[in-house]
Image (cartoon, rainbow, N blue to C red):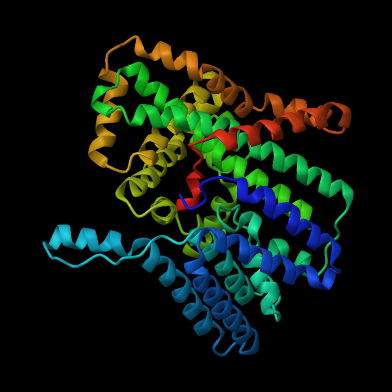
Length: 456
């Protein structure tokens, strides 16, 4: 992992924000653009050219779409989308297709020696929102390449979201207010997000890492269930933590980034879950794929087909492996079952519906986490035929507290308490200070500090 720790952020952020707040408003976009380039270059300097080309191509496409309305604007839009999707396809999926062609046709096509650029799935979707909405007439053309580059490269959410469509920040790119209240709220969100990532996700991830390295054939049933719980907690607090940090930094910069999570593990159906999990991605697929395909306006069969396409692409977007496609289609099947009438039953039985949703989500995360389909089948089988062993007591003693804490925090109980006391600085400030100091201590001593969504 190129970002081996978050320590870079601790010296980058103070220097950057000092400069950002000192300069006049007209220089803040250039400062933010350059700072974001430095941030990205720290992790992946060799792919800066991709970012620059993406900005240039879509900036020129925007100018052409605006200049040639009703004549060649559609052709320019199609060309821009082909470029954006083509770049994503080449760097993320080309070797997946080569592997499968070789396996099916018994050919010997050599794989391409490339690595996945950081955040390419996120920033490709963001820049596509600009050209598509410009073509639709929802936003005005951006005539400053620096401002468009600032939008695309903004470091808080450049690497792993949330996905911010251009229309959400178009006004703020030109004029924004930065006040002490927004800065204070931004700091709070950043520290809480950092704590979610470092204190909860990392520790739950260590448990999942230990269990997954045991060999799935060797797992008892309790250990397999414990591993599923650990990964379910890890991925939520990892991604939600990063999203909160991004939203908090955005507030400190004068931007309002959209909320990305709304207590998804409190859901009572998979339909509800996908309204609460990674909401910016769900919104992007709704607005730029599902609705253009026809949504639910062309009859039941066409709606099912459209949803199938959306969930196939959703799974494939997450990774170039069959398990991700299977993960997307798994949720498609569950959603179809709920649409067929099962959700009415769930709505009438709150307790059963919540247990069902948690189990369905947990099984889904195993499809997501284990890329080898043979190993996946072994793991799932161990959930039911793995027997019992005493080794689980050791892991419960070592990780029980963090798992319970993760369950409590994901339930929303602490959120409600925070809303009641967040304006009481005498209470909140010491708590945030302790969280921040604990994060520094853990980072200084941690050997395990992944960001799961960097690879997407």
